[in-house]
Image (cartoon, rainbow, N blue to C red):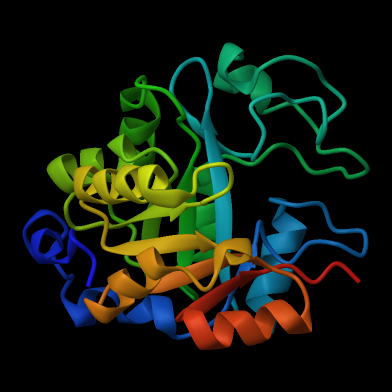
Length: 252
């Protein structure tokens, strides 16, 4: 038994099973069902996921004025024809930015929530790596006010789910975890402290790290463990044995 197991129940309480049940129900398309000409985190990719009956995972970054936009990268360069940091641009400027190879503008989170309309569950990964999390967290909370669909937020940064636990407790919250370059006893301690600090109700775990004693310990206590990014049959088998649901890509 892990030396931390007895403390987990106090610092990282098991969530109400009914509250997190939707995380088990269907796979989640990573950044929408993209590939084959569909750009990640695009309206077309989200529509494809909806058509498949799958949940959607998406990423959000904040504009300079705190508006959440659906884009993975901090920089505009890879996915658009523009350059510079997303967070350095006002929302009105980002509204005019086109995704590469499409006639789609960079979507706001508000628009994607309206497009999904509660039909299928949504995972929102909040990209806020430092201590300056409030602007984006406030923006996401504002966007989710009145939204009645099944939704959860998650982040690598434990401060993000902790913020939601304190300021928007109705929203399900998770911690994204990778063990890459952080293994052994030191890594285990750091992951445990991150979980305790985050007050997360589920984990989104790197498929490359499964099986994992840390993930298994969370599952035994009733925390759902999702796993990313599942891309082939071998990884599907690993996920089936060591996780509760997949966040997947099928690009071919």
